[in-house]
Amino acid sequence: MVFAILGSALSRYAHLDSGPIAPVTSFLTILVGVAAIFGSRFYRLWPVLLLGTTAELVGLYTGFPFGHYRYTDQWAPVITLPQGFQFPVILPFAWLLMAGAAWAIAPGTGWQKAITAGAIAALIDLPMEAVMTGPLRYWTWNPTGPLPGGAPVTNTIGWFAVATAAGLLLNLCQPPGNSETGSAGRGPTTGSAAWVLGGFFVLTVALGAIRG
Image 1 (tube, rainbow, N blue to C red):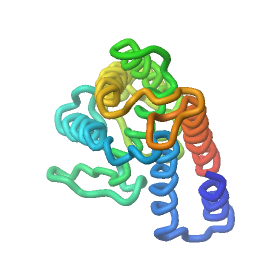
Image 2: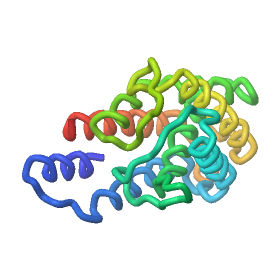
Image 3: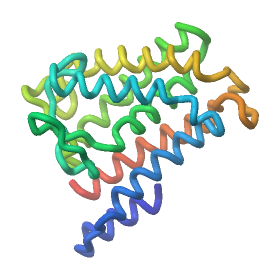
Image 4: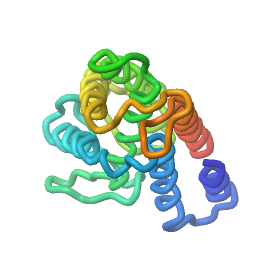
């Protein structure tokens, strides 16, 4: 995280071209965050990756469940889809980090835990929208809505719904483990998830401040 912030600062104020370093650093930062939360059971999370990818693809083409938006080429690397839609390669893993961390720190079990995780993820997304659509210019809303970054109310509802669904999948993919100390090869830890989620939020805000 520190390396990413320093690299962005040097690129902005020293007018240095970061080239492929920026997207590689971004991808590795998110992967390390996911690994810190889920450890050796990272490989079992493909259903959550598939859910996030499907929700984004449906959202791009239909406006459901988040609203009408378009990704730019700023969140590189991107894949150009039919009708000119851009799809950031790192996007499914960012979804996994957000939804996974929210699920890991959510109290309770079963569907109550999943619903709480959905609420946490939706609330955290609110302040991040202003940074992601503002200084970072990762995506745009059309039409804009009343929430931070011009997001529509449907975006928060969509985040809650998809993150709750991700929580239900995580209930099946992951054992509960030890929420405080964890065990190797078992479940995620609350402490690790809180640090990762907090660090991701700080990183996003810091990058926005540097590029703003």
